Length: 188
Image 1 (cartoon, rainbow, N blue to C red):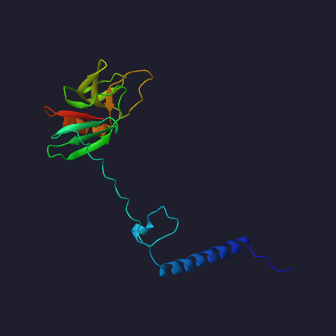
Image 2 (cartoon, rainbow, N blue to C red):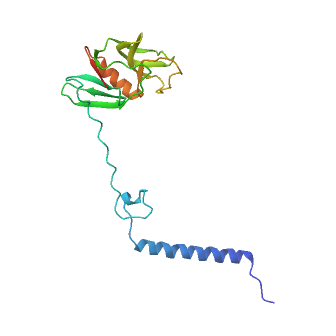
Image 3 (tube, rainbow, N blue to C red):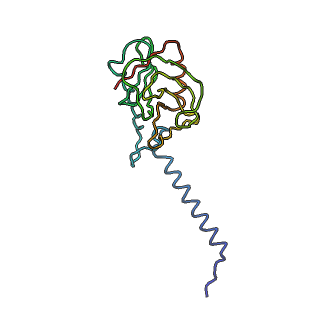
């Protein structure tokens, strides 16, 4: 009867064999092409490429609506649910989407009539950066942002007049809109 190898000999032999295989593969891989950092990033393509993927193009911000006046102003588009901050040189310095309440202001030109650093909105949400500029249906219409940055949907059947925005945009609008005689142009 042939002698039987102890189990430690089998384990040692398999370990040595595996190590040799890894070393051989590593030497072969070292001789092949090396990817660049750009090519090493994951891409939508399943195949590897030595060429970096093109950078995504940033879409341009929507243009300030025609008929929104001239000069330094805040432009609010009801249809686009978007605000532009336009400086005196007619350049939009910032634009962002907003979440309007259930009562919209009528198209026209207004002046910021009152400001409040913080209060509670008609929906019971703590808000800040409040810029009042119009009134309709017995409600004061104002730009603001929720203190916690949220934009909860109005309760069913409740009339709200706040035009909410993300917190960073609310801070930028506050800085822009608290300048004396700031105009707001509302377009369809």
